[in-house]
Structures are given as structure tokens and as C-alpha cells.
Amino acid sequence: MHRKNFIVSLFVIALFLTGSLVAFAQTTAPLSGRVQLKKADNTIVPVVGAEVTAYRTDVSRGKLPSAKTDKKGNFSFAGVPIGQTFVLVATAPNIQPGFYPNVKASMDNIAIEVSEGNGQIPTEDEIRQALASATNTADLSPEERKRREDAAKKNAEILAKNEKIKNVNEVINRALAEGKKAYDASDWDTAIAKFDEGYNADPEFLGSAPVFLNNKADALKQRGVVSYKKSTTDTANKATYIEAMKKDFLESINASQKVVEMLKTATSTNANEQKGYEANRMLAYSIMIEDYRLLIETRADEAKAPEALQAVEAYAALETDPAKKSQAQIRMADAMRKIGKSDEAIPLYRKALESAPDNPDLLAGLGLSLFNSGVIASNKEQMQEGLNIMERFTTTAPDAHPLKASVKEAVDYLKTQEKLTPQKIAKPTTTKKKT
Image 1 (tube, helix red, strand yellow):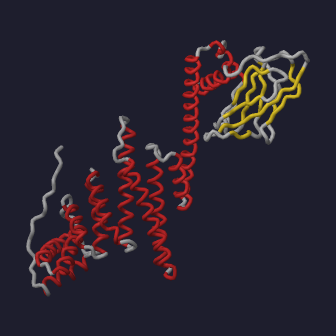
Image 2 (cartoon, one colour):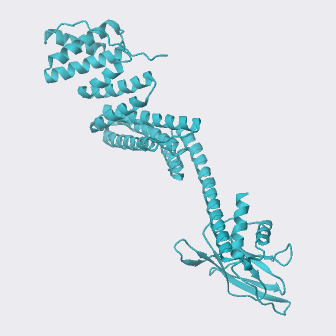
Image 3 (cartoon, helix red, strand yellow):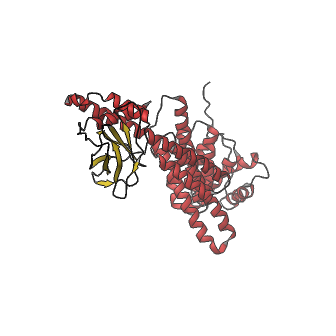
């Protein structure tokens, strides 16, 4: 419906721009002219290969065989019946249709001006409907002409916008399907390219842009993991693989950060849309945190530790699931501890213990971090707290726990070298939500 209304209005503009012309006595006479494109910068160029059709306007149906423009944009009709009236319609790919009404045989040097567009081809019925609506346009007042011009311009903008949306949706749907197929096949290069294509189709649309960015971020992360695994087996090219891994993780972080920024203040009265915004934001944080963890734990970029801690803190402030929150804190704390950043690991372990005071992973991690930090700083208070926590770990953790041996060595050192004795400590109390 909108498409038809637009065509009608556009025809109206063209129809009142020309007046009546002189008829001749011959049976037929030639007709010629040119089609020219007025570009956005106001330059005029000829339209090559445009199709020009002459529709009769002195009767209700009928048209002449179409003519084509040459490389200079010129067209001609060899024999046009005298006494008949036509409207010329010029169409071509990537232009809006152009019109020239009140045309009769023997006219020459007709200039049909067109503008850039989607190459639509109106039907004869649409053309005639437009002509019917343009009756007595010669008698229109300047105000009415201006009103019709404004209406036509608005309709043109609407049609162009709708056409753009249609094309964008086609790109988005295709890119999502092809990207998912490549992702499922672990074809990370293709997946990343397709998710990028989908994002760039409409980078500001909250209904698709965050989805494509998260998918791209995850695919980059997966490709980075592949590079890391190769670095552990191909020692000759280890540095190359580590650099490729680092690049992918950093690009993944950048994509995730775009999602977070994009959805920071996004709200919708539609419940499903709002859930989608929140889910995409939390997913972006999860991917980002894992990227930071891998960068730090593999020692590819230890300088990212402060950013990593900020990401975990921001995520924890938003996450309502205690288990997911603790998992993020534990994994980042473990990464910090493994590279010797005990001071950064300690607050993460403490926060996670608030909701899981008996978790052996947390007890071991916090105890070892306090031990390491205390020994380095010769801080007896930290060493004592670390010993107390590790002692509690030894009484609760299973024998097969991977940190059992490390904790035992630390405890033995504190007892024998530092002459410390374990002290019984109370469990931290957990805060329960009221139901």
C-alpha cells in the first residue's frame, strides 16, 4: 500500500511540471530525448541502458514498444502516431523511475531527470492511477503544489527507508544463518566474517547488533584458544601462535565492550526485548571476562589485570545468580594466583567465599594467596590467616583435590619455618535473601 501511494505522489510532481504541446499533421513522427541522473552532489550524468516506455494518456490503455538509452543517455522513437498523447516513463537499476507527461509526436530534446533509488518498475495501472490523481494540476495554487511536493518527498523517504530495511533484514538473516553454520563446523574465520557482515548491516539496531557482536566475540575467543593449543605443540612457531591468540582475545574483548556500551542504558516496554538486552549484556561480560582470564593465565598480556578486575566487578554487580557470580570471581582469582598476583586474587576469593564459605576451591585459593603475599611481604598476620584457612581446607577437601599437595607444602612451611600454629576460625556467615 505504501509503495503504491509513493508512486502516485511522485507522478503528480512530474505531471504538473510541463504544459501542452503542439500537434502536427503527419501520420507519424519521431520522438527523442535523453535520460539523465541528478546525483546527490547535484552533478548530472547520462543514464546508459535505461528503458523508456511511452504510455498513451489520451485513452485508458496502450503503450508503444520501449526504447533504450545509448551510452550518452539518448533515446528515440522512430514513428509516434500524430494526435496521440503519452507520458514517458524511464526506469533503470539503482534509480527512481522518471516521468515526462504530455508528450506528443515530433518532440525532441526531451530531458527526463531521475534520481538515485532502488530501480523499481511501476506497473501500467500504477502509472494511470497517478495520472488520474493529477487532473487539473495546471490550475493548482503554489501552496497546493508545495504541499504535493512535500508529500511526495516524504513518501519517497518512506519507501527508501522501507527498501533499506528489507535489504538489511535479508543481509542479517543470511549472515546469521551462514555464521552459525560456520561456527558449528568450527570454521572460525568464516564465522567471524559472517558475524561481522551481519553487524555492519545495521550497527545501531539493538535487535541484531549485540547478537552479532557477541557471536563474533565468542568465535574470536574460540579461534584464540585454537592458536594457544597449537603453541603448546609447535614450539618452533610458538611466538607466532601466541601473538595470534593475543590479537583474537583483544578483538573479542573490544566486541564485547561494544555490546556493554550499546546496552548500558537500553530499555524497552516490550518484556521480551528487555530480556534480550539484559541477556546480551550479561553474555558480553561473560565472554569478556573469559578473554581476560585467558590473556592473564597464559601470560600473553598480564598488564590487562586491572581491566580484568574491573570487568569482574561490573559483572558481579549485575549478576543475580550467586553461582554464576562466584564462578566468574573464582576463575579470575585462580588466574591471578597462578601468575603470582596474589594481592589481586585475595579480594576476589573473599567475595566469592561470602556466598560459599565451605567451597574447597575458594579455601585453597585464598589460603595459598595469603601465604604467598604474606611471605613476600614478611607479613605474619597474612601468613597466620592463610594458615588458618588452609587448615580448614585440609579438613574438608577430598584427597584428590588438585591443590591438596600445594596446600600441604605451604602449611608445613608455615609451621616449621615461621613457627606458626593453626587457629580455629569461625565460618563467614552467608546472607540469605528473604522470600
